[in-house]
Image: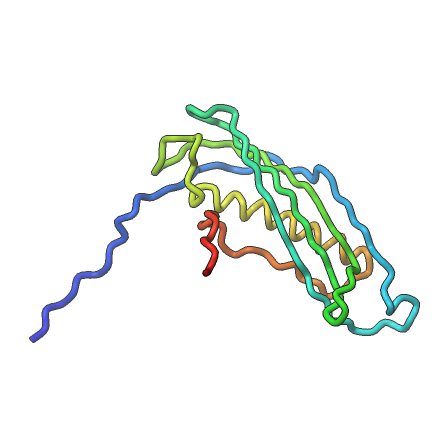
Length: 163
């Protein structure tokens, strides 16, 4: 007779920031489009590759017991033809979001906040940037573009390079 095994229990501390969005802003937006070989012809389907990058910065009103957190995101997308790698559109935007902090758990050093605590707020700002980018590209007449979005900001540490 085998003995029943006890269920796995997560022993990692709960790390989170309890905050709500106060306001968000599109700080700036730039779009550059380049003529393609398909310009002026009947509309046709073209395979496009999209390269996306983003960079976050976080600001706090205090490093002891903050009540507000500001997150800025610079979001870039470059659309290229799949065949020739010719750049069709370069898109860049900067977004800012202000959050009201009402509590936190699992850490005490605000100069070294664990990425797991910031991940939900990075996701919120990233989603705003992606949706705005898709909307702007649609206004340019580029249909059917879905900009890639990260589904996980929990592990933001640099990855070691494979040898």
